[in-house]
Length: 333
Ligand SMILES: NC(=O)c1ccc[n+]([C@@H]2O[C@H](COP(=O)([O-])OP(=O)(O)OC[C@H]3O[C@@H](n4cnc5c(N)ncnc54)[C@H](OP(=O)(O)O)[C@@H]3O)[C@@H](O)[C@H]2O)c1
Image (tube, rainbow, N blue to C red; front, top):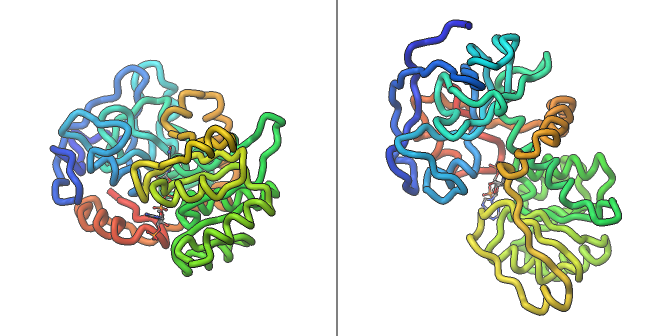
């Protein structure tokens, strides 16, 4: 066991509400790891869109209150419970929070199964953003494979997001034709700088016409959609017959309407993807973790635009909520 403190500072919420005024900094006792658990000294934890939804009470899980938010982080294992390999102690790891407290704290207890030891050369801060988005990018591309085992051309929304950029790099590396949809001209440049060929701005007057043409020309059959709402509905309408809209985020709306004729006569489909469900396939997760580590500094790199101390968590959240593009905001306890 490495230096285990008696208490830890943590960002805590006592209620679910929109905004950031309900988050406070508190000192909490550190509970020793139980059977199958580890203690991790968190070095960095990102703020992701899922965290904002969780704080507002709009996410797929609600934890008993009060609780510490934060779904992923990176750090060093400082203690392990019964049944866990003691060789983990001292290892840098990426981690998910378990059902209890999350990563926005100095020392977090989680399930050993949610602790992914990193190869030498991956530092704790890099590890902090190597789970949620990289695993989702790989899993989404797996979901795009058709019944013949081929990956058709794809489209994606919110393409300038950290995750969207990973999908763009994977598509380029694998030779998959892709249409990247963003909502600002500066984001068109972000995608072009990665080498992406087909980038469309959904705010452009000609977008519907351009997307319809391009998706037919390239043979787009799958769209990964993090926006949903009106944009998701438009894309479903514009995509060719037989297309699938795979919704994995609700940045622009909580529902998507589909024309009955598209679903019945044109064989289009709307599906959902949630990493938490996908992670139940532990073998797939282990394979993906190896792939992520091998390309941690390239395909799965995440730009960081700010590092903020835990004590300034409110400012960090407000900053991120106001500007999501251009890099992640990391909490550094
Ligand atoms: N289902 C899952 O298991 C799963 C797993 C991982 C991630 N996700 C989802 O993946 C998405 C991207 O996550 P991330 O961490 O990569 O995000 P990020 O890097 O923090 O960036 C968010 C991006 O979304 C854009 N955006 C925000 N609101 C939008 C709207 N209404 N319409 C269009 N674009 C909008 C932002 O652009 P602006 O600067 O223009 O606002 C920004 O480029 C999120 O929806 C997240 O919840 C889902």
